[in-house]
Image (cartoon, rainbow, N blue to C red; front, side):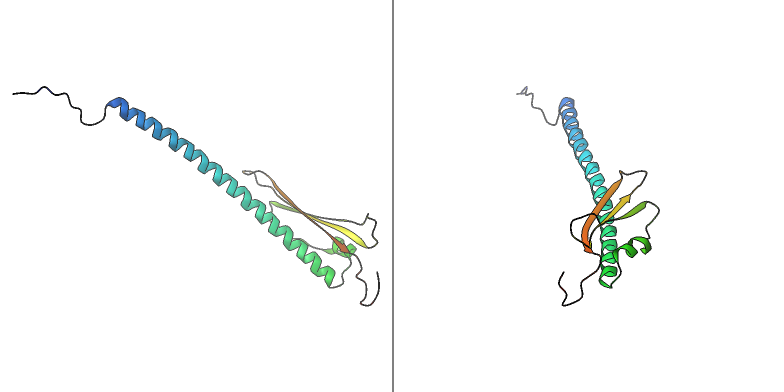
Length: 137
């Protein structure tokens, strides 16, 4: 009449604890990856901002040079405006084999207390004096 069955319905305490432990490990790994991704994204944003600043400066120098301004006066008179955490350096070097060809280097450094420093350098070569049309170099 009465059957003596030992059927189980539900989960034991050990199974619940094991599942919670596995879930905790997965969430910890996922959280670490998200934090690392956010840090990398912020660093890339700072680098990109520094790159845009350096590109703007280089475009201004090329524009001044295209208008006939000599490289030496660009180095002495050019005014750069940046925020308090950004350092912009313009280096012009004439020591090469080609006459009137200058190495122009723009370096932007972003310094912030809560992030690693970021430095971006762009370099190009510009003629100091453009030849007149029809003249040979």
